[in-house]
Image (cartoon, rainbow, N blue to C red):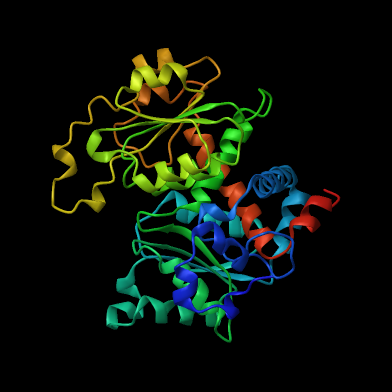
Length: 358
């Protein structure tokens, strides 16, 4: 089995993402990730195993006895939540996932309160965290930092797993996992995800959740992907090339209402203006036709669903919130369960939880 200790950083970083997967799995050979860095690490079998584990954790946690059992699973482990980019849901979701499994946590959410304020590099900060914690869950505006630190720590005398909770504009694998989990739960009694049409709308150029989810959907049969955005914010070429290479049916369009008519799931995203190259650049783009409201809701299939990674601004009207097809609040809670499953599996507890008596 390939190991990060057997390949240099330059050689590893130059590999295609799918070729990196073998270097990031657990040494025990169960196929689960040791480091979770990008969506390309997950095939359909792995997604279904993680979703089954998330369901099992949800069920066990319903009783006091089960919840207390889960808190013993990883009570001997510690996790560092290093979030150098603003976050509410992703931070709290990972924190709650750790708490479900009994993990003791520490956190840094503002570089001004750490030694980075004194000039310490992020790399040295992360090496420091690895001295005290058994897992580092990190969110950074710096693209590729999680990947670089996974290699660095694996080649140190204190290797600990890295879980990427969002890196730059490129990847957000655990968000994509909770999106897939939400779709699986939404369609579990209606034939599953295969053969569905998923519409993505909003800032598709800079939305890392779109890139990660689009890839995970390629693991399912005959899923059509439709991308709706202003021309300036359309889906990047690397996503399109991936879909082409995998023979996925896709379309790039500019009319949300027409797209909604064929949608089984609509995935709305906000404008990512924090990535603007100049102040106010996004505000100059006309996004008025890329919002979901009462008229779009009337066009959606009776069994269709609306997703959003949140936070939202005005791209989904609040009048949609109480419609049973609005899944974004359930989607948020699903994140806690799938992240608990991923963390448990990272530490090798998949089978113990699946086979326990609760």
